[in-house]
Every structure is written in C-alpha cells, then in structure tokens.
Image 1: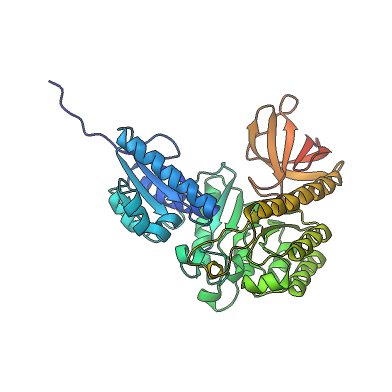
Image 2 (image 1 turned 60 degrees about the vertical axis):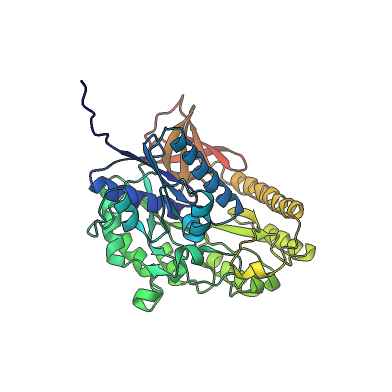
Length: 435
C-alpha cells in the first residue's frame, strides 16, 4: 500500500498593473524564497497570489477577470488556493469578498506580513533589498517611495497606497548594491511621485542627493527617472543629470493637460504658463534630455477648445515620448463629483488624434537620428533581431533599436555602440560600430 506523500506547494505570483506592482511582487517573492518556499512568476503553481491593479476601469476589469479565471481553475481542481493582494484588493475588499467569495483571502497593499503568514512564511525585516527580479537580467525597478500626498482630482492612488513615505537613502543604496551584485546595470527609479522624495524624512526634496549616492554603486551604468510630478520639481536634479554620466538624459513627467482651467479642476497645482516655463528650463539646462509625458483627454468639462489647445501644444512641444489616456470616472475621487460629460466615442477620437500626431512627431525626430551613433543596451533577442535601447528610451514604452541577428552577434545585457541606418515611428534599425 502506497503512503500519501506531503505535497510541496509551489507559489505562482501573477502581477497586473504598473512597475510599482512588479516591484512589490519581487519583494514578496524574495521573502518567500528566504522562507524556503518554491516560488515562480506567472508560471504553473498550485497556490496562486494575484497582485492586482485598481487604477482605472480597464485595469480593474483585467484584475477581476484574472481573479475569476483562477477561481475557476480552483473549482476545476487545477489549483489549490487563490490569494488576492494589491490595489484592487485594497480599494474594494468588502465588495470582492461578497462577489467572489471563493478566493481564500484578500489582502491590501500594506499587508505583506499577513499575506506571508497565510502562505506559511514569516516576514523577515532584515531582508533590505532582497528581491527576486522578474525583469530582464540587465535592468530593475527601484521603488524609492510608497504612496502619494498629491490631491489630484482624477486619481485613486492615495486611496489604495496611502500617503507618501520615502525609503531612506542608505536602504536604497544597499538595495542598489545587491541588484548590481546580481548583474543589474540599469536602475529605473519609480514612485508615485519622485519629486516629493525626501520631504517626509529629511524635510527637503532629496532626489538629487539620492542620485549622487546611487551613481557611486559599482556596476550600475544607467539610472533612469520615472514619474516625476511637475509641481515643486527639484531643479538640482538637472545639475546631477548634467554632471553624472550614469544618470540618463531622460525624465518621465506626467503633465496630464495644458488648459489652465482643467489643470485647476484636476488640482495639479500648476498652470499653462508654469508648465511651459518648467519645460523651457528642462530644454535649456539639459538640451539632450528626452521628455516622456502622459496626457488625459475627456476629463469632465473638457471642451473642443480645451482639446484643440492641448493638440496645438503637443504639436509645438514635440515631446520625444508621449502616451495619451481617456479619462476614467473613478468613485471616491474628487472628480467623481463632476459630471462625466465627454462621450466615450469623443474621448477615443481625441486620444487617437493626439497619438496620430505624436506618431508623426516621433517619426520626424527618429529621421534625425539616421547616420548618428548611440550607446545602447541589448535587452533581448526576438526573431531575427537583437532588440536594444538608447539612454533616451525606457523598456516596454519607448523606442527600440533593432539589429539584424543573422549578420551580427550581440549579448543580451551588454552595452554596445551602434549607428542608426533606418528609422520608423517607434523602431530604429542599426549596425554595430566596430572599433
């Protein structure tokens, strides 16, 4: 007679949403590994942890569908347990418990110790910077703060992530050192708001100070800034960008709109004039800088005139990188009290018009790169191409540089010099430069 063996659990972590969620999943997986748990990211596993997003309607829908998919797998006997964490769970836990009761447990964004306990693990405080990275081996996200103190009318992040809380510089330097020791060469600094970094801990904006410490980390070649809020931007960051070759000439600064009327309603703390003055300073101080921004169209009260102002401004500014989203009417936000008065089809038309315009701008800017040399990093091989990026490009959202793999051999994770031979809207074709 066979004796029944104890089944060893394999925990599958499924990540939805933004890079902040990727980071949180990596921390969770690092803790589980330190507890000798078998853990995988978006592979097979009999225990599933879904790290959800609850930011806008599409993201919420994707999160709910993923939960339903794994609950069905549980009912079919394909998985044993399903746990849900992250922003959707933080924001809608009572509703989710009622509507999808077959999930074993729901956890909020700050309940990592409780989630670990449910998974039979202990939270280890001493694991500063210990993560199982899920990104390609050459880059990783470094989350420098949690939460947000900004009062933006359309945004539910403070409801899900709480107030701004900076991570001390010394902890981030330790974490960066551990990432570098594991072969990471590029740090992508993320937070709900990089601009605010340090105000809570040091009573001053300390992003420049942090950058000056991170550039000292051996093995790190590029440091990239994501999600800087325009109001109160610390100008000393531009000095660091100019002085430190490791700090990429790149910034992701979501501007959302340019109509002063809408910026006021959005509670962004800025105006048409102040936004343009800030961008002028960026361009004058760091002429090489690639600016990525995101815009919202269809916000309550956006008239055709407001949209045309935005469109003409995009034409004039010629941003290197730009994304455009349609407004999502989110309950419990300040803007939820306003009438969502722009029809969905008009929102989509406006977003498509902005993106078509940006596509043309991107094509024109890329044509100027033909014949020029750039230092790039190789992220991966895809089909017959090695796919890389310049310092002016962030992974997944920006331009990619394609090199014919049938003619040239390059290593992923390596930095190399190339000459651009052809250019499209968002793809550059290049040949390696031989010394």
